[in-house]
Image (cartoon, rainbow, N blue to C red; front, side, top):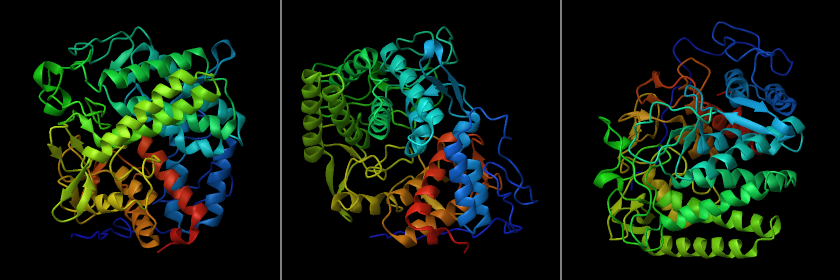
Length: 478
């Protein structure tokens, strides 16, 4: 079995260890040659949270690695600094969240971008309302089209994908149906409710959105044929479209839910995307609890729990395969006929991320064996080079590692050595920019994609804050 090893450079060429660039005041960072001020200046940020600034100041005060302090200051607030637009039409919170360099709101990305701030929502009323606004906006989008993954702020806008061969509506940026796009809003809403106790976002409109999700998931079990969704695009990229007149390869309806696309926005090969089905089980159970306790809708709650149990059973019966080297592990995609795709992708949900999404216990033996597989060269999208090692995916191409995957390895690790290695690898591969990126070349961190990708930044900040809270010694300058 190919065990995990870690390769990273302790710093970029020229050195990055200079004295005390922190000013001591929240949100302010003194410029140094190798630690330039790259964060948006106070007063020019899209949104400012006292709780987040206090966390940044605390981290700076207690972590002696100046580069990590600089990175945390840049990355953790990046979603708030640059991507959110908050308003209160008719006194109701409303938040539009772009991904960074693409002016559209993904249901997945917007949830993931504000997720790390949830732990501070009960300390900062402005921040609480910002998250409530994301939930309210997502509810409208799910009702508009549960098969769409990304939307515009302007409900009448027709964008670059308006010619896609699917049922496109004005205001929809892209209509790539992905299971996780419907799970992430539930995860955000459920944890918002548990953290704050506020039930105001979960009104009749939200209940309508939950019904739409339930209907979509049932239709996409494809027990009565392929269902109403199809998608084709004129493109030179095979991963951007669906085969067989837009319906994809057939599945044997064993109880799992089809996903036409992955969280990378790449088309699935076999439509039963295993990580997303695990995510659906968790989300259906969370939505059921909310419907029961907030909306007194026991009937729909029962339907959701029944579907969750059906998917859970099907995963147990069909998603575990006997690998000749690793033993029983989870496949990435299957079709119900016995065919399976053995790989993992950096985007979340992934097989690596299952404990992060509360889908499996971190000590589940099948997960641990799967973890060994995906973080090895037996995974065709695992890359090891001079700069680092990690998982990528078809979306960007070969030899490109996603910082998100290294971050996720750390977030799901119980090993101090592994967590420290992940921190150091991420610290060494930001390409001198002070931010995380979509992907970087395994041999050259300065060869990267997407200089403004807020999800990767905020997730990295979440990882650093979690490590700081649980074992700050792992952040010491090495």
